[in-house]
Length: 273
Image (tube, rainbow, N blue to C red; front, side, top):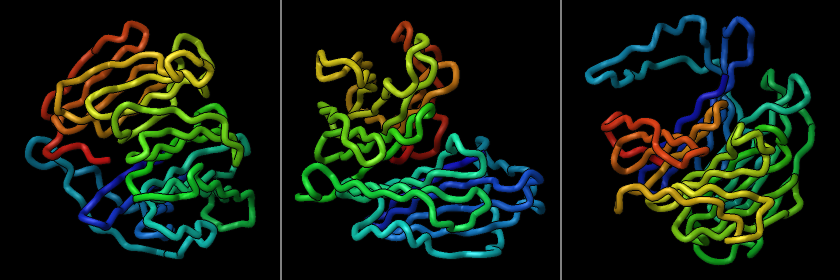
């Protein structure tokens, strides 16, 4: 099981992924990015109490002990890391850790799921413009059916670059600043690795990497004007959920391009990048 948390305060960005490494769930490895470094923390899980909820079902955080900590040395970024992603591979016992900084520099490493920093596959991909210009938010996602395929979003450039390991496959151009992206699953029995959902401005856009018309854009779903989408995710059924500035989550059916349900005011604050 993997969980993700993101926070941003001024120029500081915090990104976290949690990986439960033991069958008895005795401990977890927490991968955190802050500044230009990725850190690895081991925390105990056996003493964890059930999730506590406060007013309006808000989760109450609890402090925990750090058993072990280290810097992941194989992520040598020079600029502030904007996103990290941890995913499983076809090889049992191994994970892939991807990180991208504010200029779109992508670094991918293959790790042991037990938390050992072993010497495995590592590759780095520089942005197409060599990182010229102003840095901005950058996002990353891996294909659920082919971990070697990754998509990197760059906000100020209004671009999505798709890679197969270190080979550049295609660039998608968005109309608005992208703020989140995710490969979709089970969309009309199509190949999982070809359909990409992107949140840009107040729109949810669906892209087919095999399509040439309209630059690859398959469909646009417009939300409320001014309410920017900041998060997008897909489920195993193919449905897509988006949320953002209006503190609500809307679930869409991509087969009919229509909303299935809407959870209003489900978050106390805006849903962050």
